[in-house]
Image (tube, rainbow, N blue to C red; front, side, top):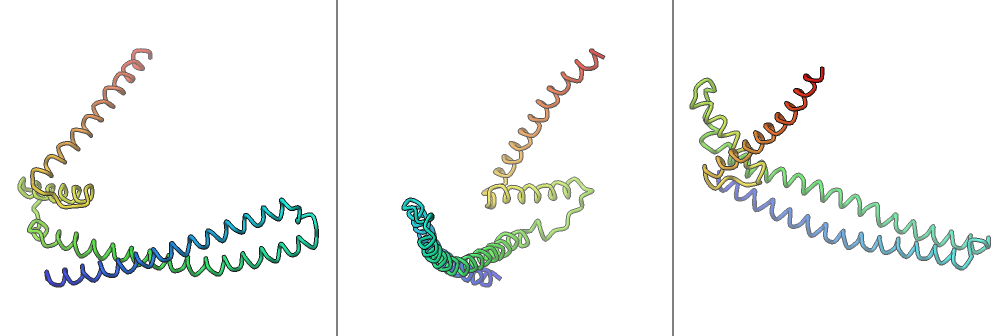
Length: 184
């Protein structure tokens, strides 16, 4: 099982590296397209500045030049957009595969995940809530906890924040409700 996970990770890392190189090359192509658009805008400004838009012959020539440039930009942009979309979709699928391989695999292999808890017993409920706390910790920090104490500290701090906000809200609304009741 460990060798399978190792092989999967190596494959995904290599494929991600390839996808990133592809995206880097496509970003350079995108800069070229952006440069062509900037030159086109400069050319249009030049036509207007020289007053060519007022002369029908010059306007016709200008429109033909702009048309050719826009077609070239479109020809470059459409496949570039398609390639970037494919690369991003590939990276998303690799990310999902990494999550399935690393995070879910770890959770499934942990002794707590293999055990079904009896939520009606104190021990079962505590184990169930601790599993949830660990999952919340992993989602929050993107890594597993270094120790049991780290999870407890995180949960304690979270509870203190929530209870503190609840108490503040309760105090604020209690004063308002009491004043309203007195006035009525």
